[in-house]
Image 1 (cartoon, protein in one colour):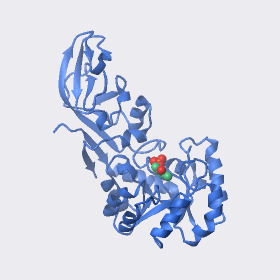
Image 2: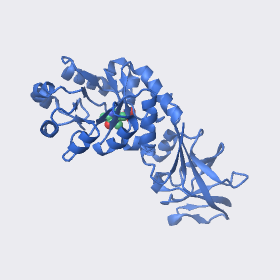
Image 3: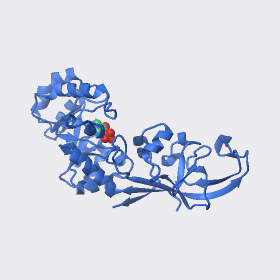
Image 4: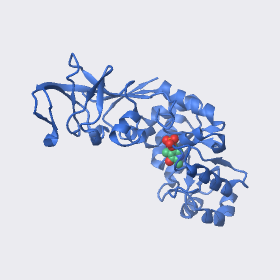
Length: 344
Ligand SMILES: *Cc1c(COP(=O)(O)O)cnc(C)c1O
């Protein structure tokens, strides 16, 4: 078995959720879209339900089925993408609550699933999803007469607490909703950290549960280890990997590791990132291939059986910084080839 091993520490994960819950001063949901950010939606949502989470969010209706099977019949499962054509059966079968984003979605929902719960998303400035203020003003009375469960919006700059966009969006959201007696939701992880003005009735943390920034105090949740398939000694000036992009500056020992960009080790880490053996960094040399990475292990005294990409020495955000991206992309890039070891 050469598949890499992704270890998911569910107790760190649930502690992160509990800590965010303690900060929230509101009902705290859990965003489990994209297979719970790559970590395995079934086990993640089950563990969160066991510590008290009752509101789960997915991106599209098809993600809801797995969650429903894990969290039981009573939890709420909300769909950010709303009610798209063809979704009615799934929404109905798994009791999913679409968050309606447009007038078209409202018409579709009231026609196809009258009396089925729904939420509403308003655009407070991000210009991604949700009704614009003018649309909301026009449709508000009809929409409210159908008893939405809650109204939400999303912050575009909440990872930067000093960004003026945060307060700007908060004011716009409040202007559209302050006169209503209805539950509201604005904050994802970043919004929770901005403080109680942003919390309203329901928060929607994702990345913080999974151990990533902007939640600096999060406990790390994932470890990633891959197996060394082969190693070799090379002399100075020999090339390694596709395109001869790396040339040995001196004699080196190279390990070939069974993991690649198909597993989410982003190709931009070529000749940049490190793997670790215990505490010792071992540089990635040459291009990352689909299934393999070559690593300079000249600093090690032995040839290790495995090397780690995510470990105590290197978090998802460290890897993200080297790859020029964010922790979210590192997590969600994990493929299906891993052996996922879920630790309780
Ligand atoms: C993904 C998402 C979240 C979770 O955001 P994090 O930054 O991961 O906490 C919350 N709300 C919406 C609308 C989202 O799309």
